[in-house]
Length: 130
Length: 347
Image: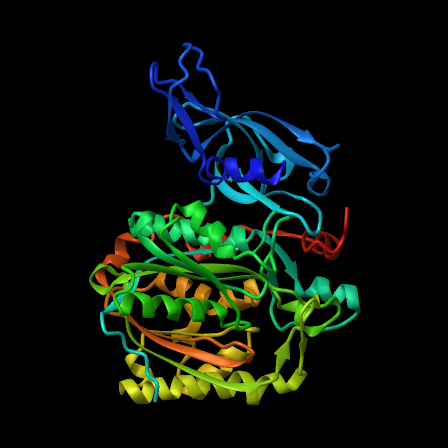
């Protein structure tokens, strides 16, 4: 991801902020230019920070920039407010991930542009610590 | 004496702590190097995607949530560390952005080896105590480096704690007094662009750790008129399991006073996070009216000493995971995995 794009998207990625359609109230993450109702008017919406794993996969052959994290889990998570987000799930062995597993927001490094480039941070999810 | 008492009464309005879940046992270091040391039982190691900034964010978010303070009203975020992910770009900018304190905020990274965290805390106390800011956050966090095969490899660990300071009447613990004791003592250093620190072996004991902690502790006790028996709890910097116990005895404190905050045997030395993490573990069990002595130590060298008085809001401002929960959440790694997590194996 380019530095300007990372900068433009850092607040939603840092704070887990989506958007809510001003017309029908549908909530989206990530941002979308047009709602399914046809509206293009949105307001920021703070997503829930806990949810459950709906489905997941284990990445063993990672795309460029993510090789050092393999094997890692990418999951579809239904947040407690009903919004679905795609995210890595960390602090768990891939074989221990289960459908319905309760997870919570955590802030992590997502990728690094080599040794000299930008470190890109954002949200991931982990099993709830209690 | 430069005793530090504020013009306006200041206290901790929220605190948070974090320990990564991976652990390296001292026995595993011994297996690797055919040695027999055990300055701690085990130490905390970061995950592949964690660093000082992510640890700081974990601590900061917990501190803000527990305080109930609107993050837009936090006027300073200072991170004390000796393991900055960027040589140039303040860690505090990212922490402040994540918690929602930007843009009306001052940020900076502090460096003073293992007492960088308490330096950051003291600066925040000054800001709030002078009336420049209503709320200010000081964080001590590290992913400490130990050269493979060096004595520090047993103990150099990862973790931290964050403290949000504000008006004493809103606080869970009020600052009663603070004092700093610093000399030029070359016990430990890391030159620019060097990956690992160097240290003076036995020289790191008496003229460094013990001299500065007892210097700061005794001076603050003399200034406040308190005796060790006036304190329910005490925290001393924890480079290993033995030093804090020995320095506590030298100052007249017993094991029952330091036990809740003594986390180094199972976490290791989290450097700038060390005494702040010990304070967080102590606040997790403290009750209103308890008095706490805290003395950090940073090589180079110096100590910051604080007297805290716990207040009634402590009861309902420590929700969520405690330090104990993070310590108990653990997965052991072998030496090779440890090197991978510390970025020593380049993929």
